[in-house]
Figure 1: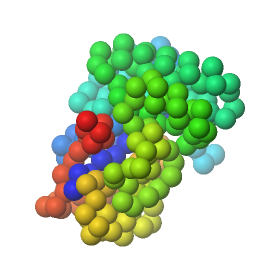
Figure 2: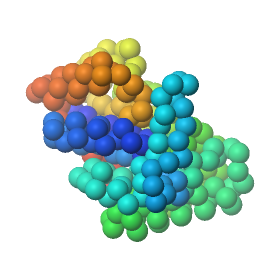
Figure 3: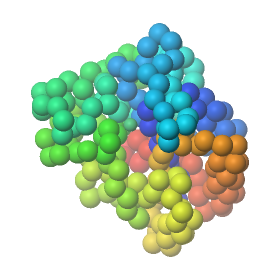
Length: 218
Ligand SMILES: [Zn+2]
């Protein structure tokens, strides 16, 4: 079984996350908004009213994510049901084009901001030629999806049933186990330690190997 994971929003904690994942040889996909990274780190907001979260600077993206897969999370992270279909199309197309420009490679995946995916938004993502698009729904097994443009993950990385779902995916013969999250949700050193343990345990499973998300659709 392949283990695939993706992380949203391009924030500072991705630096530490990437280092940790690299140390285990783990693959991951990062869902980015090309229009929200500026010359300096910024666009900050408070997570759980205490932790300041900042977007990475544009010029550091290529080095921070070196070796990892990049996917489109729209240009500026709007909710698909709060803008017009025309604006949405631009968000999808320009978001992807700018990422491809910046990273100099093909960007094949997509993640809906806030998981919102009304039918017109789904069709725009499909027409733009993405291989898959992640919602915020959960399903085990997550593969193969009925419609790749409405892809569910098995669970969020902090789901208390993570291992239960992992074993379920294995027992039903799923081709992949897929989890997602935001690195800024790792708030304390304990959180990081627990996450590292999770990655270690996955790494040690002889029945599993790290996989690329877009690779599952090619
Ligand atoms: Zn997001």
